[in-house]
Image (cartoon, rainbow, N blue to C red; front, side, top):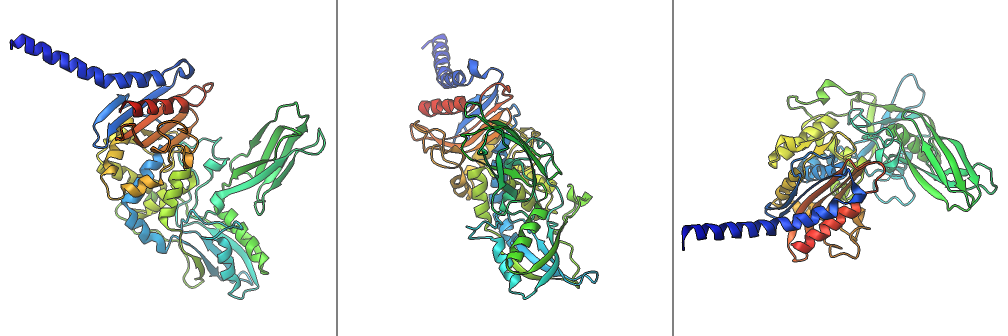
Length: 494
């Protein structure tokens, strides 16, 4: 065959193959870029399980990942699972009795070890603060001068850099502490008053009375829209609830964040002790201020333990920590921010002091070992709450590819929400070919939607993907519909 003919045939085949590769991406882009989402910045990478790219849209642009950061945190935890399990011995909750010559009666030190699952709800079955109160009651003391909530296992860093002011007053932005109970939340019930013009009925849920309510919520006629706001400034204990509530409105339940978790835990423990017949004085807190040693790079440090005087305090009661695998499961399925940040600090205890910075350093080392270039990420926490976090779609899929080759990958994947089935994907992909076939972590912040993980295409092929929608205008709706439609299109093509 003449050389020019061979060349023409090769060029034709190349153009055909290129068209085959670009056609799916073109269809996907049509799903993403539409008049309803003008201004949204999209990023997307899809590969096979070996990391061969099938679709790449702005693959190396840096995006705010929101809760996709939890992918990194939980994978790093699985990679370091043996080291985390080794910390179980001290990461539970314990009570110490501290004698002080200035007080006639001893004080109780309620010391947290970083167990994110501690609770005292009536239905509690594991890691129950009530069990700890029973142990103290069995010691035979009738009176204590007070309860001190001690969270010195971690340095005192309640929030991370880049957390939004409007977020930290609500359930998803609660303060971080080594001593946390009931996810550091208080529940409030709101119902219309029996008469128009009267203030709504606002009550705390059982045991949650901790803050002061400034009630400015007025009951109005049924044909007037319900429209109300909730405001609590950080560092204050006053919650302002204002606006209008229709007289026929259904009762509303709302969770608010606690920004002094150690104090809140001490208060709840005091109430439990008093319910068991003991007299308890005041409550207080004990923190460990941030120190230069909490900021890497540092020489190798021993695990920082709570500083207690051996001659005045002795352990008297304790609860073992909840198995770390249960925490990992909840972080992924429910996108639990507090638990992710506590996990970050526990990771920071492996080679450091339990600080946020030492935890972030471990994540960065993990990503480097996974082969990601430095420009593929910038991390400032473990949950995704920070608006300073950045990742690239290609970097996230590189991480997924690395993870898929590790012994722990199937355990990690089993923790992820399943489309149309459970977790944060329970209501997505229902009735589509991807129902039950997407295993991925969601991500949501103001102006941000994200989803990364594994999906099973219509052909049965497994694909790795990472998709981000950033810079969504304030007037635009969520980009989830376009995101999910694009993934359904990809599944159909492959």
